[in-house]
Image: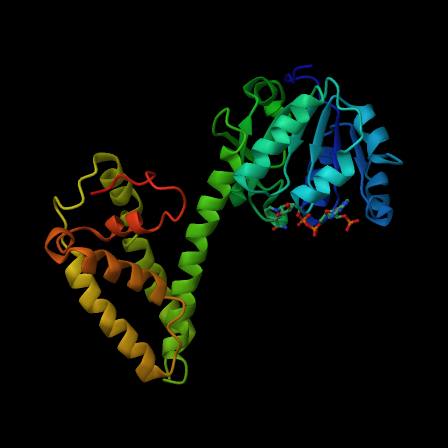
Length: 305
Ligand code: NDP
């Protein structure tokens, strides 16, 4: 079945935690016939008053519609809820956060049971669901045919970004963005710790931090350009040797302020290791060169000089 502008596609949603409940409400508000199931039935009951059909068990919920969306806590939960349920001919959309390998394994698992499958990574909190101006969206990867058939329905709660046929790539995009976010959170936390007890109000530092981080945002595109061209030195104005020296100042300042350096020292250590490996070769590089030291898996992944 294919979505169109005049028909509100019916669907099933398994999982009514904070995220699942927000999703359910937006589909119901948009007029989509919705069948729901949740392990703890009490969470489903309020949705009945909003028009949801309550299924007695996962098998009944899946049988109700061809489009089945799953939003559970983790991949193990998906397996325990859907193992033994007939998925033949179903279009299964997995909004449960997982790793790329879990996404690929779940795709093979679903396809072996006769279903089309896309995995997803939600770049939104429940309060951003159904609020387009909040800017939340969802990464999808896997069956292009499934995504195209149901795009209009999937875009009701939040924007949809398809990132390719590899069912692991939605999770990979999700985790890449979240990992970068935690680097940002770590740096900001360290900055606030440094000023504590100094008579500098966090609210006074906040606009300066935001402005500085915005100005440093150029690093994202600049690093991508260097990783693509493999040119780590042309046009570098803040080279690795200088940055390693400055890193020493950061560490001494943390010690002077009585602040642990564990949030910033891993990145500073990585830069130092890159420099120490060959100061003449790496001293003039951009810091993105340190990425070569990150891969701990099978050799041959990173090809930077
Ligand atoms: P909640 O903890 O609020 O809800 C978890 C849901 O999973 C509940 O429906 C719970 O059922 C169900 N569940 C957990 N384990 C099992 C199991 N073994 N068998 C059956 N059902 C199970 O989480 P959210 O709704 O917030 O998150 C759902 C997914 O969305 C997660 O993968 C999360 O990472 C992702 N997500 C959440 C965001 C957020 O800000 N909340 C943001 C982006 C992604 P029960 O009610 O019975 O406990």
